[in-house]
Image 1 (cartoon, rainbow, N blue to C red):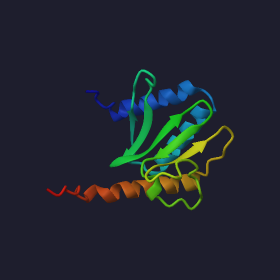
Image 2 (cartoon, rainbow, N blue to C red):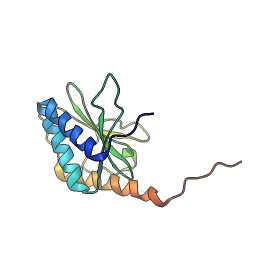
Image 3 (cartoon, helix red, strand yellow):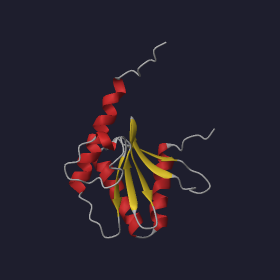
Length: 143
């Protein structure tokens, strides 16, 4: 069984991943990371889903539950919100996964501008949603 990477190690590894990218994707992921931390100073950084095809893993930001993940691809950066379908998106940041019932994503291409205020509002809403479920007991199955 794989053990999770401790938070301080995960933060350092995410920083290394950003630095290793060395291009617009790294700068974009760094900007997103900074906005997430500004929106929720208590956010926990994790690395998940490390495997031979992706040894660096996927940066994950959590507060009680997963809020969002930050993935980098050849031509875009993807910020996926675990419960995005339950969030109001008045600025229309979500542009992927719109047909799904649970997650939503923001796909950012080189040269795209990030609406910092709108993204921070979305992060805060995701944190609030995550915390709503914190005190609710899991429903029991009927026997």
